[in-house]
Image (cartoon, rainbow over all chains, first blue to last red; front, side):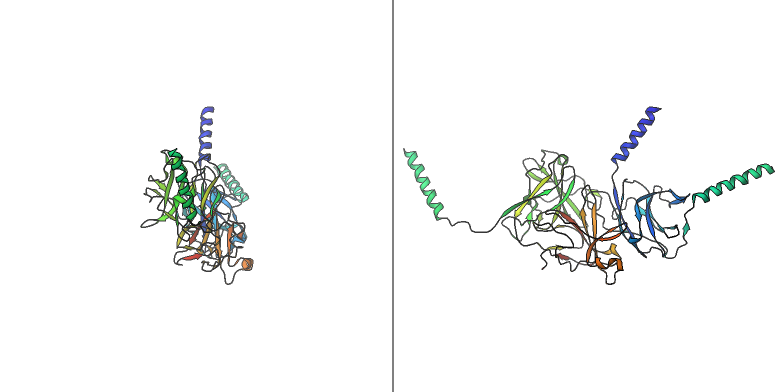
Length: 167
Length: 276
């Protein structure tokens, strides 16, 4: 058992060490009114990112938060965002937040193998910045609070207990 | 005795011929510049010199890079240092790869190689002795692991700076001078560079290789009515970070090449370090 765990760990370590960074060139000219910050998110199965309990539970954030100095609605200034892992599937999205900690997802995504906007080598420059698109006046979605989620779980548990007692 | 007389006669004739020859008159100075190109990495360099005895016309790749200190191999391109130059085929921009073959010089790599757009395929490069490289153009040098840090570019030193015509799309260029320079503080006339205000992604860009890989991208920022935060940045090369824009700083070293991405639809532009 220990050998299996050790082998798996070594394989994982080798994978991480052999992985190569890529740089994603992106921007937008349709950032929603009220945009205050943004992040780039990678999702391995290509579906949209999901937030649960106050955190990103489907997808991983790539790079730093894009802050107000880089946002002039409707523009987000071009970003060269480094992803430390070379992907072989999936897509990148942009998530924009407003001052009330609400978010919207980009309408489009960027495929992991886009050669014009993703640089994967020393001699491979970004020639086109991928433009993520948004609705200008979107319905902002509150990021679910951890407390809210806990209350929902507790409420469901209480309801289930009551049903049992009645039965 | 006869031999001695013949030798003396030959020396006398040689002396007379030498005395009759006019001295070589000129100011040609051949220079070498050391360019840092670490082993195990690919470095973008440029030649700051004219081709020897051929001022104003391009030299050829084989003559502009000294093989002194480079790693050659008898048969394996991957085990030798390589030069990589940008060119075009019928449809797209491609790279020619050359490897340093022991005893023979630069030879074309004809196996599948990586291209500027990230794809890989086979090409047949023209001979390195026929590939023109004008002063001010850039090319890559790919060093094998463990190679010494410096390579040497050579040619005829010229006091004048080199104007370089930049075509639409990607260009590999350099500053054709034996001086380092900065993008915003060298008195370079950037008239003709395309900027697009806050649509910065539509501006001409300069991509400078970073140590350890990747590029620092600089955008040319032109904005007739810039936001207050950008007033000092207009008509300058700027870097766009996660926290905002900042003016390009620092210097580009002698022999350091860089990408210039000229926007499609804007025609050619002449890079004029001499300001003329």
